[in-house]
Length: 140
Image 1: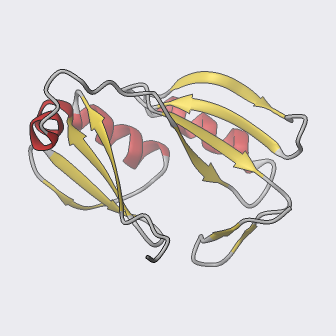
Image 2: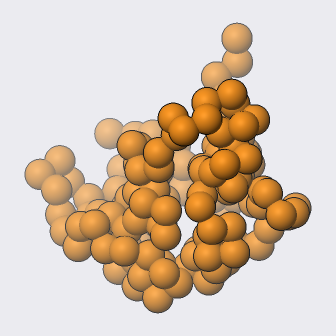
Image 3: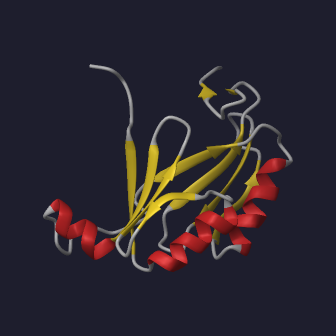
């Protein structure tokens, strides 16, 4: 089976508030949206923000979904970009989880939660190449 992720779906409680975070903070434009869901075309997959009650109904997991139990990563090409992106996310309604700093394993990173508590790590890793299309290649 091919290793791939096609869609990552985040349950959100307020779709317009979530839209402001992703369009204002990351500057991502939706490729489709309606009253329940917004799709963002990423580099090789689609990110969806789905009204939480509609997502629970769709999955058959009413009352079982809570956001924030995972972290998504957004790598940047330059160390200084970490704090710039984090600042934009905070200005678009995000909440600071961890200020940017250098972890023991190297690089530079910080964490911001979106308005529904989904954690985003904004990171620079000098060993991870990012090509012109935004694709990241794991490297040590």
